[in-house]
Length: 260
Ligand code: CO8
Image (cartoon, rainbow, N blue to C red; front, side):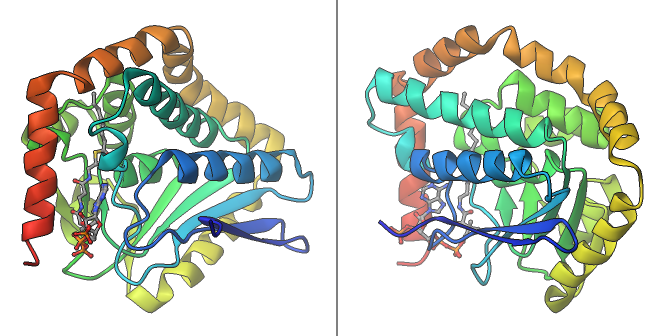
């Protein structure tokens, strides 16, 4: 199978661009998550890399979030393996020592929004067709505590409380307004803006920025680290319930019939 991730590192600037290139929608499958983590790990260990811009090669989608097919009709063992990979991605991105900027050049529901929120800074393409948010409740599923924590850390408790219950998807201007994204720019300027912003972050001495980042994020990370196994078994017992499988099937059918 062809690679789902492409990385370009410019050693002279210390900035890498990590592209998700898994058509049609960059859904976060076990394969994509595994490749993503390996790529990020390599950059993390590469002393010449100080910052990474996460983006998509697809024309309209940043990431459609977790691959629903990984959660539908799969064995408990496989669901557990998948969930561990989702945790791993979150831990790696949220806890990265590098500067991370999400260049959100398309729609970014659920896991796509989570991935964006794990970055230090978010720049979104100004296009009325794109939206971003944690829409889990609309699928009849529940975002786990560390998704919730990440959202609270990004937009504050009250906004997260409403957004999570309603499964709100925000337009670009709405996302900017609540602070879910930091900048809204024309589609063709997303990557340029990400590079410009990266320069500001890289002007700060790494050690001071890293310690500060860790001070902000470590308690949230430790919470998952000390509950990892329980979180996996919670997910597996929840997602394999008949009623939840039925919700997922209906949602998938809805996605498919939308274009029929
Ligand atoms: N997983 C698997 N397949 C998907 C997904 C997905 N997340 N999203 C889209 N697809 C499929 C579609 O079914 C379609 O398949 P097919 O060609 O076979 O019909 C194909 O991808 C293309 O999709 P669209 O035609 O819809 O493409 P568009 O460009 O029109 O729209 C969107 C792109 C906006 C991304 C749209 O596809 C969309 O809204 N997708 C659904 C996104 C979504 O709701 N994701 C939620 C995933 S759940 C999650 O991430 C967190 C779960 C936390 C679990 C906690 C449990 C305890």
